[in-house]
Structures are given as C-alpha cells and as structure tokens.
Image (cartoon, rainbow over all chains, first blue to last red; front, top):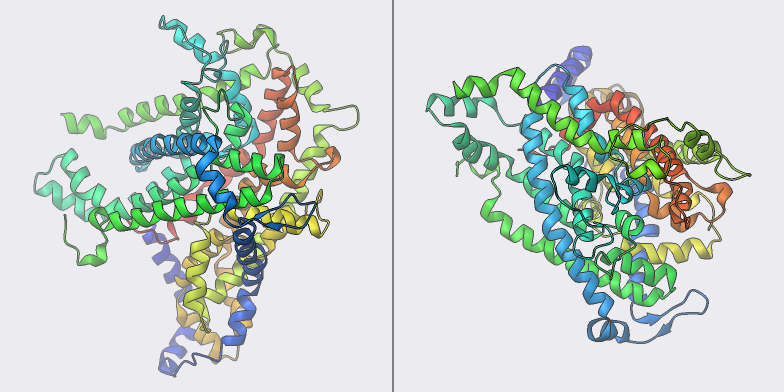
Amino acid sequence: MLLKGDEREMKVEAVHKPAAAKLRLAKKKVKGTNDNNLAGYIFISPWLLGFLLLTAWPIIQSFYLSFTEYSLLEAPTWTGTDNYANIFSSDNDFKTSLKVTFLFVLFSVPLKLFFSLMVAMLLNKSLKGMNLYRTAIYFPSLIGGSIAVSALWRNMFNLNGYFNHVLAWFGIEGVGWITNPHTSLGTLILLNTWQFGSTMVIFLAGLKQIPNELYESASVDGASKVRKFFHITLPMLSPVMFFNLVLGIIGSFQMFTSAFIITQGGPINSTYMYALFLYDKAFKHYQMGYASALAWILLVIVALMTAINFLVSRYWVFYETDGGKQK
Amino acid sequence: MNKTLRNNPVTRHLLLIVFSLLMLYPVIWWVGASLKTTAEMSSPSIWPSTPMWENYTKGWQFSPEFTFGRFFGNTLLMEFWNVLGGVLTSAIVAYGFARLNFKFRGALFSILLLTMMLPGQVTIVPQYILYNKLQLMDSYIPLVLPHFFGGGAFFIFLLVQFIRGIPRELDEAAKIDGASVYGIFFRIVLPLIKPSLVTVAIFTFIWSWDDFFAQMLYLNSVGKFTVGLALRMYVDQFEIQWGRLLAMSLLSVLPSVVLFFFAQKHFVEGIATTGLKG
C-alpha cells in the first residue's frame, strides 16, 4: 500500500515536472500562517455547521434534558437528578440491559478480533482468484446490520431451523436457539462474529505495511513461523489491533438492529441490549428525559472504556517511532 | 517439508475455498430457502423440490398499492443524494483541514476525530426533537441532510490523510502561477483525490443502505418506505411468509454486493490511506 502511494507521487511529479522545478527555487518563500483563516473556515464550514447543529447543540440539549421529564407534547419540566436516581436505584431493565450489553461486548469483541486477524493473514498473499475469496469472506459483513440478515438469522436458528438439522446429522438435538434465554445472546454474538469483514480489511491493510525485510532477516536467524508471528507480526500490528479494539468496543456497546429484529430483546430480556432499552424509552414510551439520562450514562461508560484502553495501550501497543526497539 | 507444505499455493487455495464456503454457507442456504414453501423451510435439503418462483413475483407485489419497485426507487433516490452530498462536501472539508492554516485548526480536527467515538444515542433524541419541530418528519431530509455536512467524520479523516500524501510542491507551483486556494482545490487536489472519492461514494452507499435505525425513526408512510422498512413489515406480520421475506431480502442485498465486487480494490486501499500503520 505504501508503495502505491509512492508510485502515485512519482507519477504526479513526472507530469508536473516543470512546475515542480520552478517551485523549488521559490520554495523558501515565507508561508503566511493566518492569511488562510477565512478560506480555511469557508472550506470546513459544511462540517462545522453540521457539527454545531447536529452534534454540539444536541449534546448540550441532551445533557439538559437528562435532568427533566419530557414527553415531546409538553415543555420539559425540571426534575433535577431524579432520572439518574431512578435509573440507578430502581430500574431493573437498566441493570439487565447493562449486564447483557457487557456480556455481548466481552464475547463478541475478542472473537471478532481473533477471527479477523486469522483470516487477514490467510488473505495476505497474492494468489489467483483472491478477489473472489475476498468477496466471499467479506460478503456477510457487506449485508451487515440489515434487516435482510436479521430475517435470515431468525429463520436459521429457529427450533425447526436449518441449524438444528445440521446438528441432527451429528446426533445432537438442538434447542430453539433464539427462543431459549440461555442461547439467544449467543446467536447474536455468532452473527456479529460472522460479520468480521471491516475489522479484517483494516488488519489486512496493516499487514501489508509490515516491511518484508523484518521477516527475511528473522528467517536468516532461523526463527520459526510461530516466533515470527509473536515477535514481528503481533508487535508491528499492535496499533491496528488497538484501533480495532477501541472501535469494536464502542460499536458493540451500540448494537441495535439484530437484537431489535431477531429477538426483540427477549426471551425474558436475555438480549435486551442497552441501545434497545434506550430506544424503547425514547421512541416507544416517549420518555425523552429519561432516555437522555440513559444516553449520558452510556457516553460515560464508553468514554471510560476508551480511556482505560488508552492507558493500558502503552504497555502493549508498539509504535515504530518509539525508536524501533523490538519487544 | 512442513514449510513447503504451508507455503504451497494449493494448500492455501484449499484452505481459502473451505473457509469461503463456510462463510457463504448461510447465504447459499438463503438462496435455496427463498424458493421454498413455508412447509419446506425447515427441511434439511438446501434446494427445494420444486422452486417456488412465486416467492419472488408475489413478494415483489408488496401490497395492492405498492411493489418493491417503489421501495427500491425510494432507496436509490435517497442514496443518490447521500452519495452526492458525501462526496461533494467531504472533499471540500478535508481540503480545508489538510492544506489550510487557520485558527483552532488543530483543536477542531481533534474534535472531528472525537465525534467518531461519540455514541449516536447521545444526539439522537435532540435531533429527533429538532426535526419534529421543523416538521420534517416523514421526509427524507433527516436522512439526507447529515451527508451534506461533510459526509461524516470518518470520510473527512480518510480524505485528509490522502490529501496529506499529495506533494505540497504542486500546490505551491500553482500558487506561483497565480492560483488561489480555491483554484488549487479545484484544479490540483480534486482531480488527484478521485480514487478516494470513489471509496467515499461506495462506503456511503453501502452504509446508508443498511442504516435501518434512522429510516425507521423518520419515515412513517408506506409510500415513502425504503427497502429495509418494507422488509420489516414482512417480519412484523403475525404469520411470517418466510419464502417471500427471504426472497425479497436476498434482492435487497444485491446492489451492495454488486457494487462491492466491482469496486473492492478501493475498499482495502481506501482504508490503507488512513495511515493506520502497522
């Protein structure tokens, strides 16, 4: 990939050679730093406008609403910290959904990381027909969180669904995977793991950037494959791993569509994900204040998890700029 | 011996074929099931005894009033605006961040990156209230508008990384020739970032197609439904007609799949340019 970029630059330079040469003479010209103020803001104005209108203002408003009772029909009434007090003291759905969500994150994130790394390593070779393999493997992720896949999953894991027929060949008697509270969350985790494509593509991009010389010199030293994996691939890939881990955790905390379509949070709330709970409060019961408080709790949890990730990362994430020391 | 075996392309092909089949198995089953009767749905064979093409023809006729043609049309229209907005504005914003010095640029760029980690739940309630107040419910505006605000932090970030890779000498040469920052953007940067704009377009298309949550929140009348919402109506029926549901579901993922197959090169490269170094 790096090579591609270089090639591009070279091509560009070749095309514009006279211009580039002319420039080198004048390059030392002092660059104004502030004369671009107006132009800069004009260019970023679409984002800035959207950020203020659809992100910054809503964040402030959501914080305010979390201290109110608001049903959309009447003006919000200030209730102080009542929402938070209720959530933490007496809301069993809150506890359930938090537990379910943590379980989901705990299993689905590592599983997905593991599979996507393994597959990325398998795909990181130039082979004939690689495009076809890549499409096949990426396919489940492509159709992602769509209704279509949720419908498919719901059918396959029924009591009479296809999955149980496969099990029957091996003499295993299946259960109604989706209707059984002990296995329902598992089916969602499996679905999530099946869709490891985006994570895998990011690993793949990372793998392609590990310089081949590292492996070559390790081979000269007689290092085994396993040793190379643990001493070259993993450390070199750790920033990408970190990126995938952080985004994976954040994304998993917000999982919604499949729980909404496949299990509707059931049975007995066994898949009542936090995002689903929040949706019910906001758009089913129109308790906008309460839902806003829930959103802020989610924000704090996600921020804490991310902060912990960043703190721990200094012990295992290896950056080349550290001076190139190999762990 | 062991080493040669593992590096053998044949072994690798075999591994990949087995793994691809494993990944695609549910999909293969899906194709077969879309041609089955409800009674046959739970039978162990992949292929139905007699294919029920009816699932497709009857499924397509969603209701006496609407066919899936309408829903595909609606979704594609929405996609057109989403992709247009995303491609147009993400390039403009990215150029600003990548090339121009202005006050608070660093701080604003950090904020941009932070918004990528913000759970959508925090902003969804006030946004809903806002659109409600502006009487934009049951319209495509809440779905399309965000794409005209830079197309999303991820795309801006992606393009910023890409633009940073373009030699600055080109900008400066154009400057000497009398080009303004706007001229540089239109005549130098924009043509060079075309490949990443394709990436932006593809990602926008696929993600918007699957963005069921927003569609559900903002669209109410059946005539305006997207494909996803129409499918949900099938799921919500008391007696689910699985054959039709699976048939239409399969059709619904086709556009993204076709797009991916022909443009997959841009996927990996697009992500590689974010400079996530390994």
